[in-house]
Every structure is written in C-alpha cells, then in structure tokens.
Image 1 (cartoon, rainbow, N blue to C red):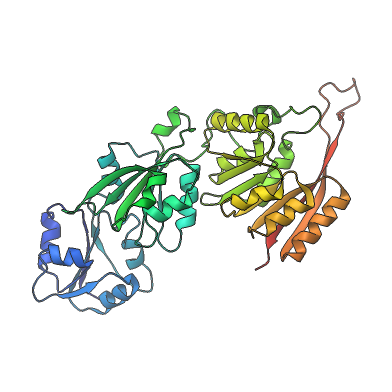
Image 2 (cartoon, one colour):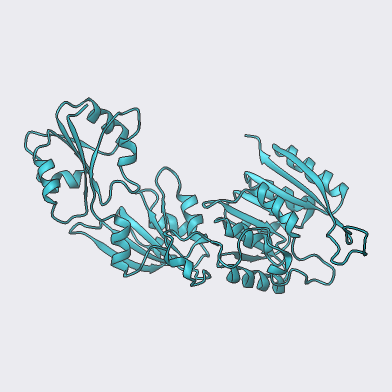
Length: 413
C-alpha cells in the first residue's frame, strides 16, 4: 500500500497549503483528465484517471510511494471516499475537502438548502431520482453523462418543475441555466456537476424545517404517526353511503404491504378522497392518485396540502387510464375489480394490493395475480369499534362491524 494517501477535494479555487504540499510530494496522482491538466502535478509522478474507480483503487493499493486522489468538491459526500475506504482495498486516507458541488449549486441559485433532498443518478438510479423530484419541492440531483438534465426532465413529463442546471462548477467554463422542465430537453448539456429541481410547493412552512437537514417528506409535526383516524382526512365520510376512504386499520395493513419508501412510485387506483395516497406520500414515495370523481380529487389535493406532501391526481376509472402513467413500483387498487388488477399487473409493479367487493371477485383477482407470476395472499379483515357508551355493568360493548376483503402480491422473480 502507498506510504500516504491524501484525497483532495477541489472546487476550482486555489489549493490550500496542506493540499498543495501533499500534491507537490506525490509519486502517484489520480483524478479526472481536466484536473490532472489544470493542477501542478509533479513531473515524475504517475498519472491515472478515475474513470473506473475500483481499478484506480487497486492501483493505489499496490503503489509504493505517496498517492494523491483529486476529486470534485467534498469527496466524502457522494464521492470517492466511500469506494476508497472499502475493506478490500485496505486504504487509510487523509481527506482535505473543498466546498461540495451541491453547496455551490445552491449558492449560485441564492437558496437555502437544509430542507433539500440530495440524490444521485449514478449507477442506473435515474428513475428513482426522478421519483424523489416528483415527491419533493427542492431536490439536488447529481447527474451523469447519460443521466443528465434532459433525461431527468423527460422522466418528469407533466410534472411542472424549474431546473437550475449547473455545468462545470468551479471551472472557467462554469455555466448556470434556469429553465422550466419542458424546455430542458431542447438543449445540449455538458456533463453538469448538479441539477437543482425546484417546484411543487405543497410542503408547509413550519418550524420543523429549520432544524433537521433533509427535512423528511411528511415529517410528523402536529399530526404524528400513520394510519391516522378517518376524521383526519377531508371527505373521509363523504359519498352517500359509498366509503370514500379506507378505514384506518385497513390503511395500516395496505401500507405495510405496499412498503412505500423514497424513490418509489406508488399508484392508488380508485383513490377516493386520497387518504391512502397521502399516507404513502408521507412515507416519502412519489404518488399518483387515479380517481374519476372531481370532488374527490379536490379533496385529495386538500388532504395533500394539509400534510405537506405531493400527490399527483389523474382523472379516470377505466383500465385505459393507466396507459399514460409512469412506471410504478407498487400499486393499490382501492376499487376497479378484476379488470383493473389485470391492467395493473401488465405494468409489472413489484407489489400489488387490491380491495375486493366479494368473495367471487377476490378469487378472480387472486387468479389474475398468480397467472401473472405473482405470489399472492390475502385475508378477510373484520372489525367492530368499541361502543362509546356501553350499558352500565356490561363491560366493553361493540358497535356495528364491517369487513374488508384484501389481497396482496409480490413478484416472484
């Protein structure tokens, strides 16, 4: 292993004395081509590129001498330090960071960023990064040459956002461009350091946003927890006998089977007043709620605003409405029956939950799921609330009960 390994973060400004001294004594310097050309690398030092970081790490581990690795900004933040510190390389590092590209990008935009989400599109994660942008009003995306601003904007078709595209931060060629998302694909972009995606704005301005970095979506304030009581949602008792929101105890089980997390996209089909959609969004997932009733969609929007989350609403009730939706990770079919479930599994989500209106419909849904290669299960969930005023001396009493037929499934492959 090299006698000494120093990782220098460089943001285009003059090197510190410590960084310049480490570079001057290096016998091996690793970095991007523009960094090796711009910095005073010693004439006799071996130069290696960081295109394949693991190959570079192995060469550094085998080197006998003093090694320096040059990286952008803060190399401990979505940078090279994580790879270099892997146990298989056995490297001990001294890290000299500069200002991170994310901090620089928000500084160029003149914005605070303790409430921002920061995601990386590296490693084939563009779709998950786009889902974070759907679910949150302030996101910094670290992009790549093949997962850049245009590809991200195309993933967000129909979702109004403002892009702040920061190209070549910290270099003489630095450029910062502000565009609406629909105009971004019309441009040819250099490989940027970071893209800020701004918009949405249903998140409330509350006191909690100022003390916790990366303020989580739906972070509990006055209303803690999940599977909140039915009165917590506007319109939960609307509909003239038709249940417009799944009861809280049913929502709890549905959410457990959907398992929504940040980066996921969840559909709720036949969403009613959006209680389930809002709760899935409070877990950090991007959510599309499909509902035919305009009044119910309006109440979904009101519920989303109340809890500070983003829920995209789509008009429709037939299976054909699903064709234009982005790819889901999990789907809850709150109404629609066998044919809707059949249309859902054609899109191959990882997880499906469906409410059935009868035993015959439940059997049909289960057949659709198993035929499509899903591992299916379900139950008949019965409940009866405690009576508020039991008869004197009679102990606990129960009110009129109800039941829900619920099925869930996961891909077997």
